[in-house]
Amino acid sequence: MGRDSGQALWEIHLTCSTLISASAMRADQHHLRLNILLGGMAPLYFHIVNVCLHCAVTCLLVHTCERYVFEDSRLAFITALLFAVHPVHTEAVSGIVGRADVLACLLFLLTFLSYIR
Image (tube, rainbow, N blue to C red):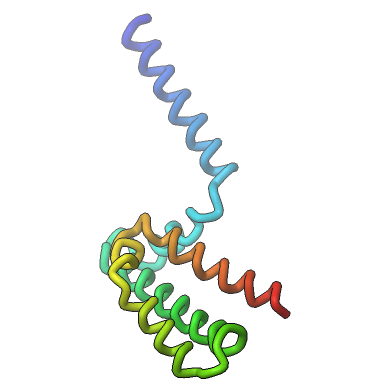
């Protein structure tokens, strides 16, 4: 196999992988593409979106706990506050890859609320 055939195989691989990834893009990649479209590749925009998603999850947790878990709204607030500031969520909020965890939590809470109704 010469240098030209190696280059041809590499081009075929790139073409096939591009077509496969474009046609079978995972659902969790859409938010990354939207983030790049809106803010470019600057890490600040990725971090801002992650913080906003974490705030949305925290608000949804307050709502869920108030309506279906606790009778006292103060307990729901304390639960959501502990969730918001717990150190285990640092990686999920600060890293781009951790966005999947935040989105999974958001979708779980929305699914739970839909099931309860």
